[in-house]
Length: 294
Image (cartoon, rainbow, N blue to C red; front, side):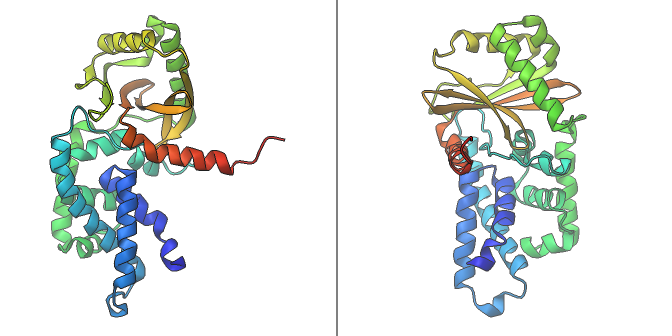
């Protein structure tokens, strides 16, 4: 178990990026462990390669079944948010964790997504990826370029440092709470879009809200309906700043952002309670382990 645990963070990172679901990623890692425990020693030439192959193939199978479920999903499907307090790492790592990036990956086939994630986020060569997917290196290279072409229209603009993003999100929160239309106009890009994921379990906009004016009206409407005991906290979620909305000590919405060129281009509102469960466990664990103030 100790040997396996050294690879657990890597396996979870791969599975989460492949699936966009932290709870499903945990299941894939656990299943990988079970396969490892029952494998013959002769099957394992390199433990790392063996584990990565198993988790990748499990995720591929999961994606194939999840694709049908997500086509029937009520409203917008968004990834599960995760707490990433150590996000001052490489920009490439933050990018591959972002809600915008994970949402974009939904446009790829399972095989394209696997190759794109393994090559882009983890820098694995095509021959190693081919061994995991039972394909040759040329086929993996073709899948990668096909994925690139699909995503080319959505290539990210200049993304500022995390501190600059946090400052901008703070300004957005103050403008939204005070109803400052001019400030909101300056902060929101003309083509800004709001996606809301309630999963049919809570009330949420079924269709994306597009355009600066519509989004401002949408934000103003939410502010008018705000609960009396509403509190808002700011956390680093999926490598970027996010607003967490609470009532009665219960988290009910996470708002993530796509920020580029000094403006907000996308807002990702996750309200589905099932998708907030993992994040709430992360927050409870963190708050429980923090030392008490002197």
